[in-house]
Length: 166
Image: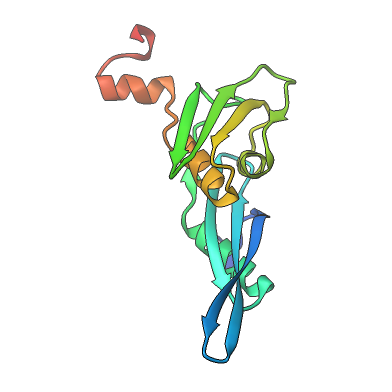
């Protein structure tokens, strides 16, 4: 949080609800229903996070998930309006392939992947979601791929070389 004149100013984040599912627990008197929500939070400037919230009401589960997602933000290196290189993200049985695209291509992505990519601020990307289509797994597979992105500068530092040598 940025601080202005001693007052903490809330940063501008966009919240997108990816999925809401009603879950039930069977107890002695019948069934108890609660809600599980997947929320994606991003600043459209290279930071994105996602989390799951569970509560007895939909609105409170969304608030819980958004609060958790803001604590688990990922910094993603961007190359203009796209990502630096091809990457594959995996989570459980979901797999998301992401490729950089030429300017003007737009966001070619399905629902859960699109939510993450748009919250991140990427405008040109090609994606393909494979195997499990579960929104929870797809969101976290996308985050796994984004977490593993590297710029040429990062790779050069890891190898102990100059950027020109790579």
